[in-house]
Image (cartoon, rainbow, N blue to C red; front, side, top):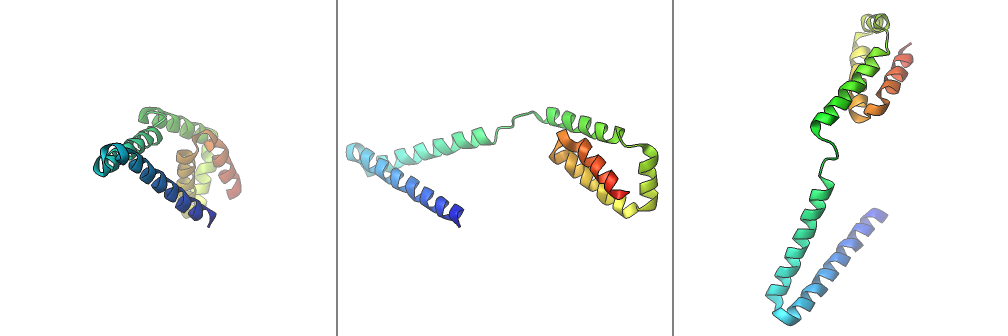
Length: 124
């Protein structure tokens, strides 16, 4: 509820400041130019915000490389015989666990090995 109220008041504040700035510019150049100038200013601010917040911090190649390394480390620490026995014993659960491990690696590559070990120990 507080978030909705904050968003509403924030929108009202931006609307009020935009109207005030348009009125200030309209005093010197007229309402059409004032409204246009404020609209252009708001569009430029929104484009700057979009370009800043949507710019990736890493390239796709770096993210894929980090994901591959984390997956290899997680799988290297599990003994193969244990994994084979679990798949033979519970095939449906092993597919679910593999999906969970894949999601875990994609979501948090740095802690993927600990997640995989915790899931493997939970199956025993």
